[in-house]
Image (cartoon, rainbow, N blue to C red; front, side):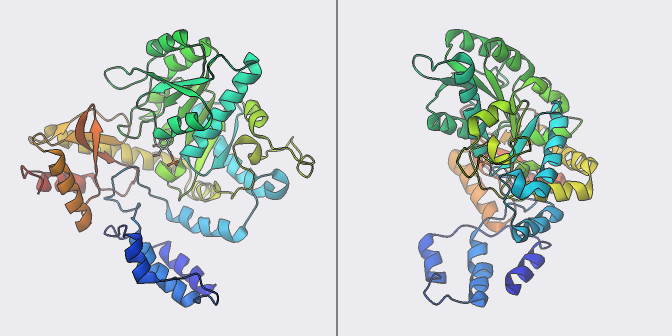
Length: 442
Ligand SMILES: Cc1ncc(COP(=O)(O)O)c(C=O)c1O
């Protein structure tokens, strides 16, 4: 036991190695062999294998120069408290078992609800990630439509979203047997009220609209106010996917982009993305949680004695047993204060703006859009897709920067996602300046 605890204590303060990377299962098998054996291999050997072979075969998502996908930057307080949550092993599904821990999680959800401008009785739950959060919210929306409209429409239910919505939305639609109506975006990439209005008029099966509070690829926030108005005019539920970008609600310089979110029906944000919490943590919040409880509450002889007058997180998403995974964020927020969070998110926004400006001023680079949040999308005119790949792989192997190619408006491009306040924008600019001059990305 002490070996694992000592490792966790030491690791909570150590910087991660940017050169670590995946290896093939066969290479790992050769290095590790069979670890699950009749007699066990012993704590010392298991710890040694984890430290020396298994962990180095994972990618460091916390390195300040990891700007690929959506990286992570949990505070040391949150990482340390994650081990406390494991040791406390609280059942967080129902109030009766987890009251104190759920109370603390709910204070964090209240902070988020205040940022949304939602009423006192809005409520939510921490689930494992954005995919589960989106699925649970859309299951609520579909169930609510059935209850209020009385029956399933001819041809089944549909949800509407832009083509830029996250892949987890079409996955949720598949699981919920809903069709996806893809609404055209404007020339800046936003889902707008008029385009949505047309789609809603054309297809009365649409019972839910998903708006992005920061697209993954480009950090675009849909036109939330007009989208909410159009959806509500047609009796459709509005879910805002802020898995990545929702953190920017905390930043005064970006809050205006979310105007209109006050009237949306459900919302997610992943604190493991840009609110400095470790995996896995998604806050799912409902402006009015009653439809969620109607959709998700589980009933059984042994469950029906629980006090439904208290906060029972199991009632608000597709789960029953749950780890109180909101607590690392609670501890870190309680320790550092919400002002420090606002400043840290602002720092990331500022880094993105600084790097975007440098790209715009550079002769050999092209900024593809002004960042709305903290994603910068750009290209190196003249480079082929192979040149982008070579450049990206070489710098990843050297541990210099992690930046992988994407596609933007049909073209290969590069994207940098700033969610780590320790990232030095000048270091990023220097890497781009010094490595992107070569005409072939070599
Ligand atoms: C906008 C958005 N929604 C949903 C998700 C899915 O979140 P998760 O990976 O936590 O399931 C992501 C992940 O990057 C995302 O960026």
